Amino acid sequence: MNIALSLKTSSGPTGGGISFLNSLVSGLELKGHKVFFDLDCKEIDIIMILDPRWNHSNSAFNSKDVLRYMNSINSNVIVVHRINECDERKNTRFMNKKLRQINYLADASVFIGKWLLDLKVTNEFSFHDLDIVIRNGADKSIYNNSNFKPWIGNGPLKLVTHHWSGNRMKGFDIYEQLDSLLGQKEFRAKFSFTYIGNIPKNFVFKNSEHVQPLHGELLAMKIKEHHGYVTASINEPGGNHQNEGAACGLPLLYRRSGALPEYCEGYGVMFDENNFENKLIEFRNTYSDFVNIMGGYPNTADVMVKNYLDFFEFLLKKREYIASRRKISKFSINALRLNFPI
Image (tube, rainbow, N blue to C red):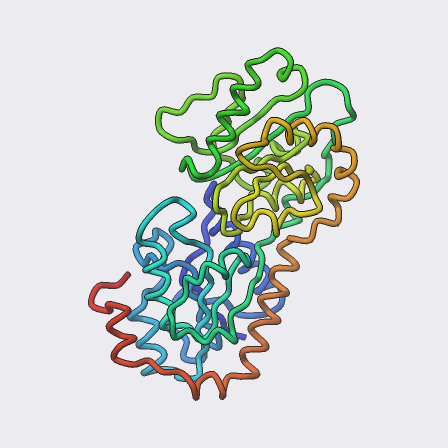
């Protein structure tokens, strides 16, 4: 199978989107498939659009390139749009519009969470019979429970989280609350907290450890120095940070928001902004109930890659049907604003 991806891989500390991409590429190539980061090959089976922002630093090709390839080079190619963003995630006002514009090119759409699917960010003419949810997964060759030492009930329960983005909607209302609680002697005896990654401008932790962004083995090692993983991200479409924490063996303390419940249910304690302190205590009291089942956490890169391959093979079997119903109309082209690549 020949698969072209609209984003290039990258090394070093990055967001969850590139972590996903690195896992997908290595998984596809391991299975013997060819991955391209351009549209030079005339026999591409699947074009996968991974980000609607063509000015992304890792962008490989844009909407004009995709449309030209579909119309002039290979009309049998299947275009898959992976949707992992939304305005609700960071309180922006442009992302959903960009997603709908790009979606006019797509034969099928992949969402990284059912919560995101239910937002209906695709265009009104999307062929929804080919919409599917495929969750992100952590690379178990890096994020695993080797050398992880769970909390045995003595001393503070060490909590950790990590985010590439320093946007406040990553959960800084809760991280700030936790940091404040740790200023109390009672809580400091029971918990500690480490934040790995970027933070909002002028934000300062007073009672917690802040570590600059880490990547790969170094990140996994740092996560495994702790006992439990907390994520307070608001309207998280899916993400990968909670997967990496869980894959390292850490039970999850997670927010009732976005796709986090569908990723984390059964592997920790859920909270909201009104009951965080009580749920924090509950997490400590029930920690042993979860730590022994974390090895069964299902959201791994191996499962994710298999799900993408199964979906690609399903689409290729329906290639003739998909091509026959495709309509790239003047309306669609106008919607894409092809004179101004988006």
